Image (cartoon, rainbow, N blue to C red):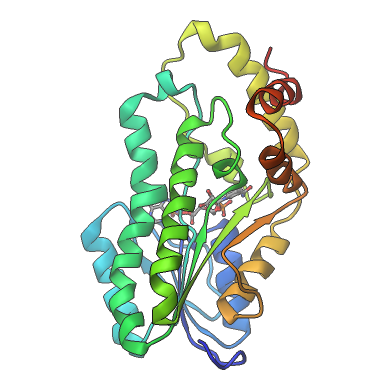
Length: 270
Ligand SMILES: NC(=O)c1ccc[n+]([C@@H]2O[C@H](COP(=O)([O-])OP(=O)(O)OC[C@H]3O[C@@H](n4cnc5c(N)ncnc54)[C@H](OP(=O)(O)O)[C@@H]3O)[C@@H](O)[C@H]2O)c1
């Protein structure tokens, strides 16, 4: 959509059946963009935008979805890689299979969509890619290790991508939210069989997370930020957002040992 800040373009949003993605699709459609929202299940309703079926884990599904967007409008100005889920559990409980599944959606799913849209953006000579990561990708937490690792990898992937695409006039941004009330908390994946050695610390950690989630604010600030990045009103690589965003700055300032002691106290896991 560069260089005209007011331009209305074609936007693809992944993970649009609910949460941030659906609200963003509604918002951008209201602002006059041609919006395609994609996910495995269809949303209950769409307001002025088109739903496309998509499973980011499936290369053929990604190719078909992007081809439909490009076929309908002849261009893809922006993509918001928002599809994702949270895998809970101790890393030993999640196992390598659960870790792989988490990366299939949260990292490789993004990479598949990026690979599919880039030829269109390169031909256009412009584009915007917004990747929805998480504060948990910047602050590794216990019993959320698979999720943290996948979002950490996404953060790193996005920063490398940003360097590579800068000369091609394709902007890359990362949005790293803290807790927001989208209902994602009710859709977490948990490993079937727990290992008793982790029971006490895991239970305390889940209590802390549940308390934080109970105080999570509405998703509107994240939706506004995503819309601003799509439209070019906000720029820059990394946007950490939420009342707990200052934790990221504190983490970067403190030595590892001091941070670890403070974190374990704050999480009440000992
Ligand atoms: N809410 C928060 O507090 C928070 C904080 C930090 C980061 N985030 C991140 O923000 C993004 C959106 O989260 P949300 O809170 O809006 O969660 P949500 O309400 O659970 O929405 C997740 C969306 O992703 C889609 N999705 C999941 N797996 C998919 C797949 N394989 N292929 C295509 N779509 C898929 C889901 O649709 P289907 O199931 O129908 O496919 C759904 O539309 C996620 O990446 C999440 O990690 C959220």
